[in-house]
Image (cartoon, rainbow, N blue to C red; front, side, top):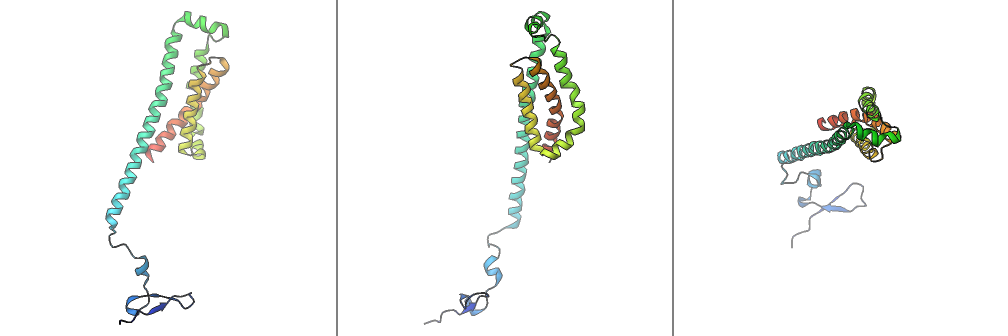
Length: 180
């Protein structure tokens, strides 16, 4: 009958050992060595393929979100322009709530406040991060759109200023998100 393999002592054990063919001490590569079917080049190609897919997915998602957000915003502005073009409509709709000149104030809020936004946009993106800055800016776009369902001075003008404040961080964070 063949003799059982010798047990080599394991450091730190209580005299128990592990069986090693040939009777020598176990080598580290026997326990943690590379798998025989492992191909480093193939794994590297898989990694870069997954990374490229993630980049494409992020670009498509950001582009779709930007298109939808800005499409709704421009559609709303176009609707306001068409509806408010008629002087009679504007007088009938807004004269009873003292909003005859609301278009000028809303457009000033949207077009003037981005100048100030140029100053704090880098700090805002650094503080919140790129994704959170985009999320907050899209939320402000949603606030602007929803405020147009209840047309009052105290809803339209502050939301127009808010969208003017958020327009620069949105596009800067979206550009940052896509290019990184």
